[in-house]
Amino acid sequence: MLKSMLTQDATISRDQLREQIRKSVQDAQAAAEKARTAAAQAGGSGQGGGVVVTVPPVTVGTPTIGTPPFDPNLMIPQRAENIAIAFFVVVGAVIIGLPLMRAIARRIDRGAERPATIPADLRQQLQQISASVDAIAIEVERISEGQRFTTKMLADKTREGTVLTPGSQT
Image (cartoon, rainbow, N blue to C red):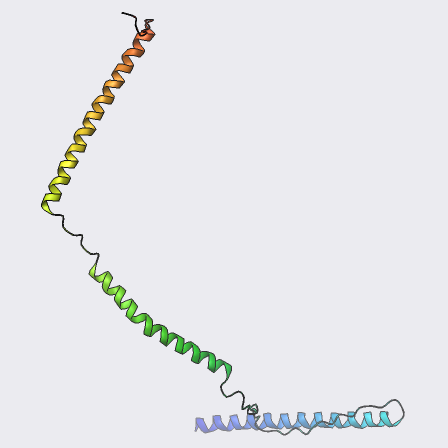
């Protein structure tokens, strides 16, 4: 019952709205007719040639949306063409890129390749070379320490006033 009352109220208000629209359209048509007759009278009295514009009658009803005429040269709209091109580019990228990505992923999963093992005789030779280099480093350090000591001693003697020259005796 409540539902029927609501629909009656809705139809009443809809009918009232339609009647108001019809009345305003009729008023606009009457005003346009008055303006046309006034323009025709003014144009006929010698005040200049007026242009009469006729207004087509307005029909009250459901508005319709027109479609543009068919263009045989434009079979596919531009946006649809762009979307189709983008789709095929993406499909091509996936077809080419997927195997590449899988190969890279497998290589990463395997990890870095292990270095080859060094043979025992080569390892022994490398240890001997390392020991020799260490011994040479110690000897070079001893030589440089001796040079520092000698330089320090000569500097101390020159401060004391004794100057050693080649050929002089101390």
